[in-house]
Amino acid sequence: MSDELSIIVSEQSNPLDGAAFAAGPGPMLVMASAGDCARFSLRTAKKNLAKATEAFGQVIPPQIGEMSSRAVKTALCLGPDEWLLLAPESERESITARFAKQSEQATHSLVDVSHRSVGIDISGPGAALVLNAGCPLDLTALPVGGCTRTILDKAEIILMKPGKEHYRLEVVRSFADFVWNFLSSAGREFETESG
Image (tube, rainbow, N blue to C red; front, top):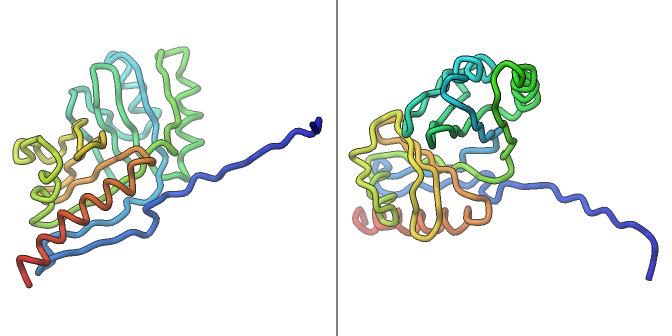
């Protein structure tokens, strides 16, 4: 047996990098990989949201199920003291540094979870129908600017509704291909109906 130490460096890659799908006339459905971004899990008390908003550079909503999005940053309230923050990868270090400076003033936990999930954008008049092929929620009840944890077939997802016919979902990287294939398969129904 050798006394040599082996170091294996693994680079995370987005399994959906460059993926795109469209179906039906119009098209009825458009899907695309949302691309990589910085993702943070923030845990803090609501009394600290003003400081957290300052550190993130974007309003962090106080109510569960609310999402705030401006320019290239998004904040989702997922629980009584839990938020998911999305930002450009180029801002990862500066966001982390700003939160670190505030740690004594506003107790919090900020964890970089960028490699945990991937995003999928799904839009068009058929987006809700395709999602409802595997999601038990009444998506008409989800307001624009809303978000929730749910399931899609067998995969846990975080579902956001940035526009009337626009959804974005975050799925754990290991389920990305499964979710993409499920949505693509459901979306092919529009091709059958129009053909």
